[in-house]
Length: 244
Image (tube, rainbow, N blue to C red; front, side):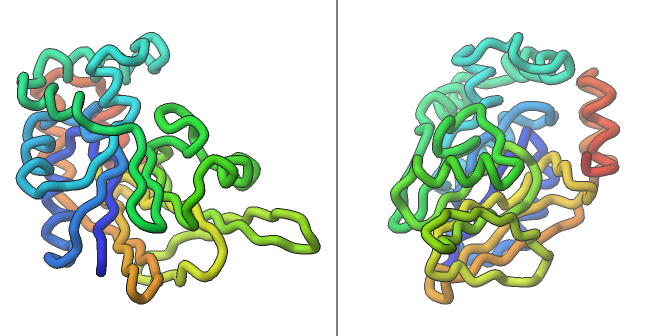
């Protein structure tokens, strides 16, 4: 069975729709959190996911709009986006976000937003942090988001020593999961930060034991226009053009 792995949609409906149009129709969706924040269509993104019966966990921006984390922990632009999103959310959208778990396990896969050790806030950017996090989940594989950068961390054992190595995920180049343990980040649907402005996601093929990373172009100018109309932070508008 295949699954579509999404993360960090951030209220970007155009990017979400582009990913859904590109994804295999027979691949149920797993979402790794941060449905809202930054983007101009938080309610529409939530409604779209609800219509698809997605298995979803909560992210730090989702928690922020529910006042479950201190907005002062965010940078000034993110704070403005959180407060704007709070004013936009419908009661149904708020109820949906409130219902999302922090962590899910589905067979051999663990789903968290930040890290298994700190599911809401911790960023796994480098192998040393990833290596420490393998002790905090029991399944062979863990999917994370939060950094907006696609990467695969693989744990090896060499001469009784645990070694964690990062592998760059390349578009259209499926990676075998293998017999070891992995932490995989599919990148961001709505606000990539790896220098590629296209929406990022991944396809998990459980039968072939592989993960395929994908990129999809979408109408960035339309999203930017909606953000400008909503008077959202200029920096967050411009960065969509460059994927940073």
